[in-house]
Length: 500
Image (cartoon, rainbow, N blue to C red; front, side):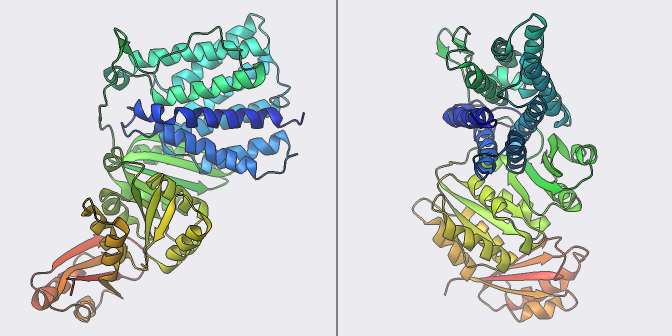
């Protein structure tokens, strides 16, 4: 048997276990935000790690498998729970590798690696909360250490870790007020227990956990399930995530700066990559911090809009180079991918945004020709989810299309309505010095909406003269001004006309 066989088997089994439990984990997700996506986030995080492993040659070393999974799961991590799990597994696998690999590690090595993993999980979180995945991580490590101190062999040590993890999982219902109110255990903690169970079964056999009692995820009263689908809102309305590349340790500065903007902050790193996550009411500031950290693409979504979304429906992905447009586009229901340099968009980031938007199909609208070209290339190479890429190349067309999507009613085709909005939007640009003249050339009596998107450093006052010009030529038109905060040109212009 090859040295990496056991670790590959475990990682695959862990991902399949979460995939099988995905809907149940989503259903019991109430912390930190009841947005019904913890199971999905955990699965997609594990899936991306395994995708990276699958690209290795069959005889890749244990260390190469560990490095590939660490990088893949970090870059592909979804949500707060995904970032923490990625860091936990990276910490565990790295420690296991130092002990000679998963196939040859002894009981003490298992216990020490679980302890390292728990430390890594806690470090990933700005303000740790007990009664969560963190509590289970620490309990499992403690259970393993106590078993080793009592003379337990490797398999018995793993069983002890699972037993301690399950006990801690059951207590999350009491420790976490939101979980207690909803009648559930913590979803992220349940996902971690699945990983520990698969680890024990991979090394000890399928029946190694048979003597243990399972933990019910929904607390019952009189035999009846007492789960209530509460939708508490805690912390910021927007979830912002980005990956930055740096040989410097960014954990402390990113954690400090993001905690000043919101909560549910987690920052984790591996192989000079840093994944950051925050829930905030000031997404533009979080995006700006990501750009400062040289993140090449930043994902933004409105968690209030997203938690009730039907994942079987068509999703919307908005690609923009304007950091300031993330908030209004997310408010209208889009998954927003901010790409400050449109030529630097990675297919992986776009693929991730599409998956986050919908499990079936998605409409992609891009604010730059290079972004649209990347989306079209992805659409040609994948079957599911099916992608519809709109014929857009300007930020004002993105605004028009996403706004039209918010008005779609049952029976209307989302893609058709968004495409019509793009087609009805005439676009232009201006340095800002003669904005009123530049707008005059685009408007007429049929104009309904004028959108002005201002670059960083451009005063809101430059739009005042343009408003007067619009009022004279198209008195019934609305003028909407957005802080795009992009580099150039000074003002992007969009003019929407009534259907002829």
